[in-house]
Image (cartoon, rainbow, N blue to C red; front, side, top):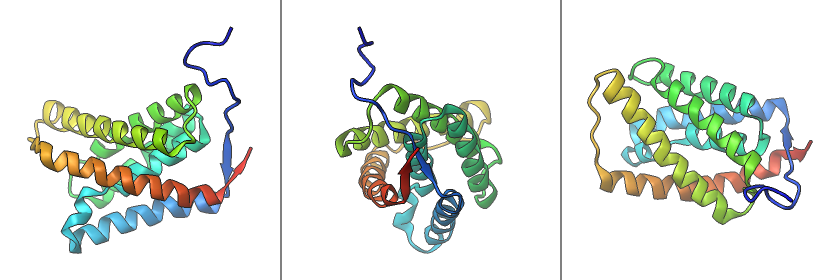
Length: 172
């Protein structure tokens, strides 16, 4: 008898061209870094987080999720003005949780993806708050109205981005 949290159908693992694995996170980092300087509304969107979530869901390998989250997060740290390691730590946890979750649940439906993105956005925020405020002593504002809007923006953008990135994947 299967476990209650295991999907009844076989979950599929996807592979990507190595060029896609390099260019998509790089493109997300460049867009996030430079557009946020000129467009204030871009500060609500976290494209590198969405890329870490997508590849974690598609690859379904916790080790690859950890490595992908760490690399993207540390690169984002290097391009930001915050402390080195803060985003790297948070995105490492997100990569692991996403990959682990994708092994247990079927996450191919848009609705499930939307709920996953929204939940992981809040987990990412709480990790940043925990690491930054409680461990590093750097105060962070808890503006809930902004967080709700940012979660909705990231969820909508993530579902659209995932549809686009699905075109570059191939079954393992």
